[in-house]
Amino acid sequence: MEKERQVLVVFPHPDDEAFGVSGTIATHVQNGTPVTYACLTLGEMGRNMGNPPFTNRENLPKIRREELKAAAQALGIQDLRMLGYRDKTVEFEDEEALTNVMSDLISELNPSLVITFYPGYSVHPDHDATGAAVVRAVERIPAAARPKLHCVAFSNNCVQELGEADIINNITHVADKKLAAIQAHRSQTEQMFSDVEEKLKNQDPQIMVWINNERFWTYKFTN
Ligand SMILES: [Zn+2]
Image (cartoon, rainbow, N blue to C red; front, side, top):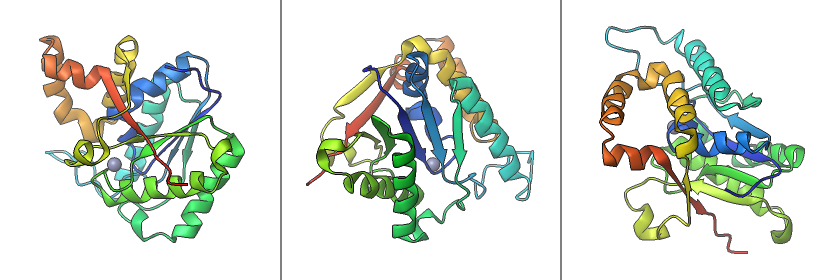
């Protein structure tokens, strides 16, 4: 992985960073690169409250805030920003205002690399709206001065329409940190993690590929 000056990661939900990007984040941290993670919401509309329930609607944001902090700590992220938007409503935010928030972050941090969702290929409306705002903010910067923009995509049609991911980061050397980050989001991942853990123990080839490789599409600007 190339050494970056500063990395800015922007996602709408606590745990969006854990599955597809946390090994990449941990690697940049290990390389001595400052990483800022801007998380738009606290995922407070999440339906997963356990069975039997471990919390209620009122307390879920508090729990997810603590989980997010724990995940950031597991990855060594020093600069975690919680932007205070409401879960499941990012798509209804004023586009211009949201773009300006992203522009402000970029001018403050001057990242050499920005990571977000690929708008239109990220399944959840919050994901697409977040990615779109980041794309608009980067697009405003003159082409020669833009940071690299690496996007996560996972809709069924993403490979068909975008082609294969042009960046695949092997993160085997920090897989333990990635697993710790996934586990930190207990309220969301505990049930699935026991299943993953079993497969890890057995070195299930599919799960190993999934854990150890993180794929990104470099955003292609038209101007
Ligand atoms: Zn999400």
